[in-house]
Length: 131
Image (cartoon, rainbow, N blue to C red; front, side, top):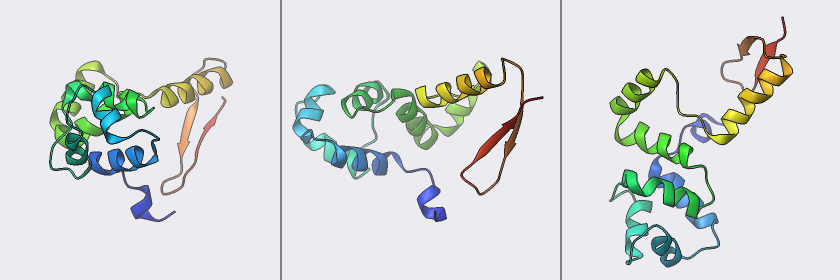
């Protein structure tokens, strides 16, 4: 996989891809997230208008995506210092449902010990050891 394919998408790129993959019209999505005019969806897709924080959850749900993922994407792009401060105060990063499931699988597999984690830089793999 090329480095350009591995980079995190912008909010506009993510929304464009997910909206294009959706079977819903932009009008349907706009209505579901509380907007009358579907032109706002085009503005989100081309990045001329930022996705408001109060719209992150409804937009993610309308597109069948994890709201936590979209929130983290929006915060990291629009408000990176605020995201860092929030995560620092919480002592953790915002986890999506899939990330949480991965952590739970590691906990079950390690019999709830604290296994060593091996990360292979530049590779799409992670491993852990049961000690």
